[in-house]
Image (cartoon, rainbow, N blue to C red; front, side, top):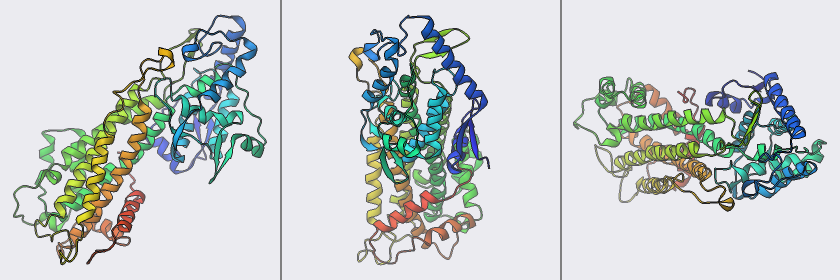
Length: 501
C-alpha cells in the first residue's frame, strides 16, 4: 500500500479515489505538478510586470465589475476581499467526506499549470487534507455557474486565517488553526483568489461521493432483489441469458448475470412453479436495474472528464502565450448528469418498494403482512408505508434542477446551471435509496423464512444469516423503527469488493 498518492497528470478515476479514501492515503505533488504550477505562476508574474493591459480577475474586479482596473499594489487585497466577500454559504454543513473530496479535486485541478496559483498555496491545501483539517462549508449558496463560488470561498478562508475548520470533532477558527500549527497566513497573489473560488469542485465532489455510494447500492439492489425473487417464489426464466442477448444493453445483461449467480443452486428457484409469469417488479429487474447501471456509466464518464480538467477562469496557456477568459466553471455537464443519476436511483427505490408491496400482500403462500396471526398482529404492514413515503419523496427530489436558471451579477452571469442544487438533492436520493433497500431486505428475509424447509442459494443464505444476527425473524408485533435502522446499517456496512464494475 502506497503511503502517498502523487498528484499528477495521470487520470484520476473513481477507483483511484475510492482507494485513496478507503486507505486514508496522504497526498503529495509529483515533480511534474510542481513544475507545472511554478512555470504557470512565473509566467503570470512576468506578464503583470510587462503590461498594464486589463486581464479579467488578475488586475480587474469580478463579475459585473470586470471593467474596473485594480492597481498592482492592491492585488493581494483584491484577492483576499474576493475570498471573504464570496463566503456567503448557509444551510446545513457539508459532510466531512464531501469536504475531503473537494480538497482533493481542487488540488488536482490546480496542478495542471493553467491556473497561475502559487506553489505555497497548493501545498497549504495539501496540508489541510493530510492533517484532516477540513474547512466548514455550507450546502447552500452556489449557482453552479461561475464555479461553486460560495462553498469554494469557505474552502479557501482558512488559508488566510479566516473561516472555520474541523479539527477532529471540534470546530475552531481559521486564525486558531494557524496559531495551533504555527503557520503564517497565505498571502494571496494576483488571480489566486479567483483560481481558488472558480471551479466545479463542490458539484463534482458531491457527484463522486454519490457515485461511490450509488455503485454499491446498485449491487445491493441486485442482491436484495434476488432474495425477494426467491421469497416470492418467482420463475428464473426471465433471467435466462438468451433473453438479454437479443436486447443487449450492457447494464441489463450484467444484472441478469448477477441474479443468476446469486440464485445459483437455490432449491426454491429450481422448483416447479404454479405461476406462469411474475409481476414486473420481479420479472423486469434486469431491464430496470440495468438501465440504472447504464446511467451510472454515463455519469461516471462525465465525472471522470470533469475531475481531470481545469475549471477555473481565466486559463493560462504558456506555449501559446495567452491568458484566456472562458467559461469552464459552468456546471451544466454536471447538473444534467447529477439530475439524471437522481432519476435513475429513484427508479431503483421505486421498483424495490413494489417488491416489498408484493411480499406483504398475502400472495403465493405467504401470510398477510408476513406475520403469524395477522389481525392480532399488523406485522410488516407499515414498513411498506414507510418505503412508499420515501419513494414519493424521491420523485419530488428527482425534478431536475438543471432546467432552472436565475440571472445574477447585474446580468453578466445570465445563465447558470443550478448544478449545486442537483448535487445536494442527489445525496438525499442516495440516502433514501439505502433506506428503501433496507426495508426490502427486512421484508424479504422475513418472507423467505416462510419458504422453509425449501432452501435458497448458498450465497443468499449466507447474507441472510449475517443479517439475522442484527434482525431476527419476527413472530409477533415489535417496534419496527430499531429494526429498520439495523437493516440500514447492515446495507451501509456490507462489504462488496467488485461494486465498481
